[in-house]
Length: 277
Image (cartoon, rainbow, N blue to C red; front, side, top):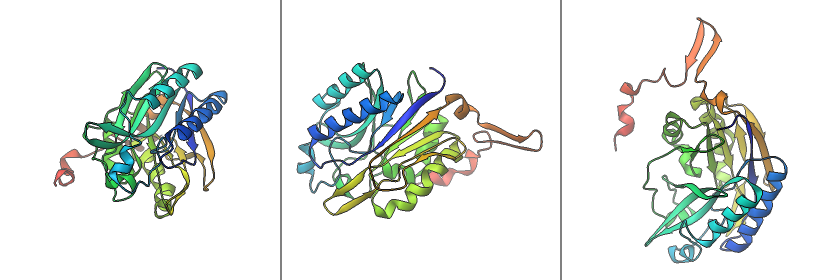
């Protein structure tokens, strides 16, 4: 792993059901972020497909396997630009459909994540809940965790990734207007409580009557905002990430008088109720 590096979050509009157009725009944005020095670029939830599908059958027409042509094309772009990207897509496995993310570099797909917490909204009405444990992906840049949108409303998701050593948690989203306050406060809170970098990357535009609010944000391990697109327009956010800063969980304000440790001060013996169904 290297030292500090630059990330980019692409707050973009997405065309429902038009995988080719969406992917072409993703690659154009990727080239732009690389020219600005970004080594990892994060795109919104369902950035290849759109979100507001009206049936499982309609969504399945846009779904692909992990070894499908779209991620292969993105791999080729990452190889050309010598970079990494996180993209949202609809993943097909047998007769199941997942709302998924793929982490891609020039060698291929480094890891995937399937959305665990599903709201009754958009394509999530038809997808299967994620069936794999939360897992951190070691990369040449940092230890990376991924969640999707509604996952952020369940603090256990980010906490598990943090306990596994995540330096940065990426949260691609499709936040509608009712999630405006979530966009304002949740990224800061998840970063602060886990002492990790946290970036939420939302989309903009309208699909079938649903507006998307933007408000993408990148926070540092103190919960301080490094970049915030506080609007509904397309924008690319940039921030510098220092993995070593995220790994210093022992925070000393006044030696011997005011110290906290984000992990050692936990009391798992008191949290049993969380695990009850």
